[in-house]
Structure formats: structure tokens, C-alpha cells
Image (cartoon, rainbow, N blue to C red; front, side, top):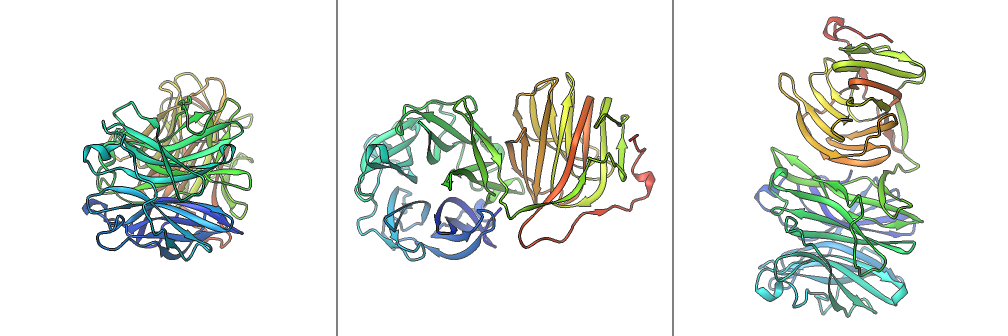
Length: 502
């Protein structure tokens, strides 16, 4: 996860130059969103693995008073042609009329704005016609080699208020012709389609974007948004018509502004994760890279991606059936034929009393009909506090929950998933600081920021008949290494409750 100290990261792009990746992004001061914000220039950082970023000097400051971009530059996207980097970015005036400008560079550090900016503005079909402040932002440029042209996708609004993604075309990356909307959202619960990104794979075109409903994100509560999703469409042509695939919503509620660059034959997914403070969104960070997995049915999945220079440091694994230091609360936990087995009438918990911070905690589990099972992270040894990552067979959901002593647990997020009775499923939680990545059968399902519990134990929860196998807890250690932060708790035995059987 990346942000420069004291700053937040929002809409961004990544481009490769030699052995380095260059990140350019909106930047602003952290924790200022509830009272307004100013995004004046673009942050710049470099990396060799898309995960660890070194900040550089920001680029492309806002224009002078009276200029089309006097109120800030946002949402960059870049393409390199014959050694020249073309950066398309959003600018706005004092009335929040938005348009897209161009700047060029040969080294990614020194930039020159085009003298005839802006180069792309929404056409007469847009809200420009009706006198509202004009939405024309979040450019993405695509080399459409099959038609000897470039396409530029951007966020816009129809004159009648419908959200859309518009497109322009060019043959020289300077003079652009308006092609109008390529996709119009008919569902009025969405009022913005932002951060479009087009990927061609085989004979299909995949249009990823952020779909939002509700007020502008900054300074509002997460519950104010009926939709805040990263979604995608599929077509046989780069300008549509577009179809919504069966898993149209890749991530919901907590992420936006995804980018899907392809480097050395691998298509990645990086995105912005919102951060909550006192019930409001107050800042955001760049995610670690994920990987797009192309499915034979034409859909995509989001999988974990760990660079080669990041290695696991094992905290616990169940290969030897050693559960020394674990304590049980309810149920009869038994080890049978390589699996941990329990049949619990009510909620039962099994806690490893190691205490620490960041963890990757995964297990294979087998649920009987109407059973539920969970991973516990940042928990206390009594299983009264912490986070529960649960899979519920009867309800068909995966969820993240906050356990609160003396109160009903709080639902932080749930998503419907397919759970096959009689089959083994793998559930995994990657917890870094206040950020949670939750996977089911290797597919990313939930991303969340939550900062109530900063450390704790890890363990299991079960209700009904459940089997667990291949338990593994580890930390991801980068090239610089890290000091171990997991220690055995030395609480009196009676505070743990009665231990289960092994």
C-alpha cells in the first residue's frame, strides 16, 4: 500500500520505462476531505516491483489564474510513442468546468504543456449544453492498432443527467475528434462512471471503470453511497456495444479508480482504497498489485499477485497437526485424517494465542448444509473482540465482521458468493495495517479499511459441521526484511477457557 507521508493518492496511472515503473497520481493533504481539498499537481513515484514506491518531485502544477486548469490537474494517463511520453490529464476552472489537456516529456521528469490545451472537451450531447458545470475528466488513451488510430476514453454526463463514458479518436495524439458516448448508464442509481480503462485480450475488449452513486466521495460517510464499485464491460469492438458479464461487479463499496496495465505479458490491477476516520472518508492509498486472470468463458477474476522479491515468513502451519498454544471456546475440536473437525450446535472458536500485527491467514474448509465457518484476525484470546471473515453456507455470503465485547457483532461488508456444499473452499485474509484483502478460492472478494483493532490473535470459528485443513499463517517479507512481531501471550491459563481436543 502506498502514499507519500502526509499525502493521499487518488486517480493515477503507471507507465514502464526500462526496469522501472513510474506512478503519477492526484495528490493532496491527508485527512482534509471533510472540509474540502486542493489537488494542485500530480505526484510521482518509481518502483521496480509495483509494490514498493520511492517518491520523486511532483509534476504538472495547476495553470495560472484564469486558465482552463487554474484549479488543479487530476487523473493522468500516459502513452509512449517513439520516445515521447504523452500525458492526458484533467483540468478545471473556478466553475468546475472540466476538460482534458496534454503534456509531453522525453524522460518522465520534465514536462511541457501543449500550447493549445485543452485538447478534448465533451461535445454538444453533454451537460455542456445545459449550463451545468461540465464533467469531462479521467482520460485513458488506447492505441487501436487495428484501425490505425488512438482512442481516448473519459468520464462525462449526458445533457439529461445520465452518467456515461465518452470517447474521442485521433491519428496523431494531438487533434481529437468527438465520437460521443460509448456507454450510457441507464440505471439512475449511478450518477458517475469514472476512471475508464480499456484492455484488449485475444479478440475481446474489456472496459473497466468505477461506478458510483451518491454524493462526491470526499468528506461523506461510506453509508451515503448505494454504489461505489469497480466494474467492467465486455465487447467485440473497442467502441462497443458493451455487455455486462456475469461478475460485472469485481469489487464493491470501498475501492475506486482501478488501472489495469499489461507489463511483460501480465495484466495487473491496482486501485485506490478509501480510508475511514470517525465515520467519514478522509484519505486514500494505492493498493498493492493484483493480477487479472482471464477465464475461458470470457470473464475475468482478480487474483493475488506477490512479486518474486516478497517471501513468506511462516507463523503457523498445520502440516504436523501441532496445535500447542491453541485454546477453544465451545465445541469439540478433533483432528481426523489430516483435517480439523468440529460439529458445533452454536458458535465455537479456536484461537492461536500468538499476538501480532500483519498476517496472511488461510485455510481450506468444508461446510455441511447450513454450516458457517470463519477466519479470526486481530482477535483476543477469549474470542470476544476482533475481526471475523466468514463464509455462510445457508445465506450464500462471504463477509467481514467486527466482534465487539458485550454487543452483537457489526457487519462491515458482505458479498453474495457461490458456496458448493460437499466441496472444499479456500478462504484467505491478507491484513496489512488497517487494510483487509479477502479471497475466496483465490478470487478477491472484499477490500476494506478498518482501524479499531490494531493487533491481536488469529484463529477459527465454526457453527454446524465444519472441517478445516491446510491451515497456514504467514507474513509477507520484502527485500529489506522485517522484525518478527508475533509473540506468545503469557496470560493465566484460566483466562483462555477450556482447551479443546487435538
